[in-house]
Image: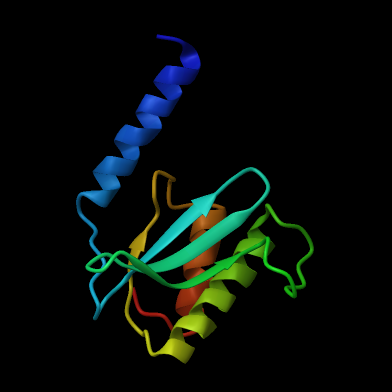
Length: 120
């Protein structure tokens, strides 16, 4: 097994460890975070029907941010997703950090979403 294959396998294992405990319902959907080297993406998902209710990313047009792959951009995405969710009537979510540790950009997004009205 090559190094890349083992890295992908370890990431998949971490993702399953997180997702086996989290399931988004209609009353409490799942806030899923994905981060790449350049961008940050967030979605609020209802797993009972498999639908994305609200989404935000640093690739969206119209958002003013200093960069796209830093903490400041994550804070802006957290604020954006919280405002959109409250606009649709979603107040409580369960946080899916995917396979990432809860620090840095992921923590900045979560803290910003909490600050702007989402309850985890």
